[in-house]
Length: 115
Image (tube, rainbow, N blue to C red; front, side, top):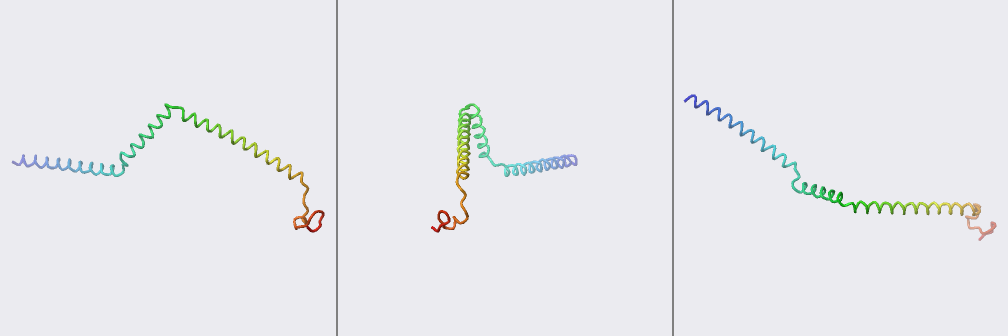
């Protein structure tokens, strides 16, 4: 009888340890679930990955972007050239015009006569 009692106590101790281990795992799983964003995040990642795969298989979007970039660079170069030309013309105009005297700004006409 004492032998049976010892075995039952050991079995109870082992079962208690198993229960505590299971409870600890449940708590860990609950923490993981709380930190996990869920299926929506996985689906978003899968969709992004699929898009990347499709673009790798289809070079058309990349070629379109490269073409657009080239066009933009050409347009920018043309605008920079036009701007530089306009600056030169402005500088030429400024240099070719005679300087006004300080009196001409005060409402006086040609050759210092009141206007």
